Amino acid sequence: MSEVLVLVDHVDGAIRKPTAELLTVARRLGEPSAVFIGRTDHSAGAVAAVRKYGAAKVYLVDDSEIRDYLVAPKAEVLQQLAVKVSPAAILVTSSFEGKEIAGRLAVKLGSGLITDAVDVQEGPVTTQSVFAGNYTVRAKVTKGTPIIAVKPNSSAPEESDGAGAVEEFRATISESAKSARILASEPRQATGRPDLAEAAIVVAGGRGTGGDFTPVEKLADALGAAVGASRAAVDSGWISHAFQIGQTGKTVSPRLYIAGGISGAIQHRAGMQTSKAIVAVNTDADAPIFELADLGVVGDLRVVFPKVVELLAGTAGGISASVGTSQPEA
Ligand SMILES: Cc1cc2nc3c(=O)[nH]c(=O)nc-3n(C[C@H](O)[C@H](O)[C@H](O)COP(=O)(O)OP(=O)(O)OC[C@H]3O[C@@H](n4cnc5c(N)ncnc54)[C@H](O)[C@@H]3O)c2cc1C
Image (cartoon, rainbow, N blue to C red; front, side, top):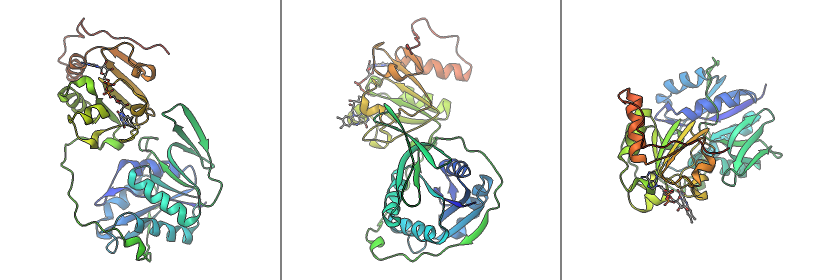
């Protein structure tokens, strides 16, 4: 069976959930081989984790020479590994970094590339949801090695014991790949909430919050969810751009997306339309967000969200009569 290379997405050796998803997908296409680029002395946890999700092989690439550079060297590592093992496919996470690596790799290998896949089946045949979710595209790479960037939360990670045979791999990095250097980096202040792009649940607020994100944050914390926002909320200076979801913000694909005070403009939909279940809370029964919501609540988020938090905590005395609920028409 041919190998399928999976680029491991990790922070200091701790693998991120999308890697487990990619390994699960890779098993449908061939024999998964994880590619760990990082500090090899910090790799033991990552090796154990990728083995748990079925990695038959783990390529360890010491990043001491390339740690201070941007993504170009990683593309060269994957290119040289691909030339060596002739994989059936190469899978990366569809993040900003993953897509840039995939793009550079596609050029280097002369291969076709599919980004933002929401499903990958044997073939490999991918599914993408495009034009703000108005079209579903099934596609297949017809040239070279299929390179596929898969959106986080597109599949549920399934455990499967892999042999996890470790093999060190050294790549020769060109000077041109080192032309952009990282001079300083600062860890983002931890909020204790999951990362927006890979969260299984997202609670997002828009202009309807009136600038007070407290109900959004409290509901997110009650659900173990990430907080997101519309551009109107970001442009008003209520929350930083890092939280923006949409065409010019982050793309999310959680299992549950809860939108409070968001009208559902096409540019916002572009970033959340592939969520598995969408719940919208809006005071306006005609808000376009209800067209794509699986459950719509016509109500004030400042009333509905705290009530849901109470219900989750088991301290509510029942939904208040002032909160109207409606199921949008199919
Ligand atoms: C090139 C371009 C790129 C863009 N990129 C993005 C993007 O990436 N992401 C993005 O989000 N937008 C983007 N936009 C902006 C987009 O067009 C909308 O303007 C924006 O999404 C609107 O945000 P909103 O839904 O929060 O605000 P509004 O459209 O003003 O909607 C607010 C909603 O809140 C409801 N509401 C009011 N009070 C309450 C309450 N108390 N409780 C419940 N509901 C309430 C209202 O009924 C209304 O439906 C882009 C626009 C352009 C032109």
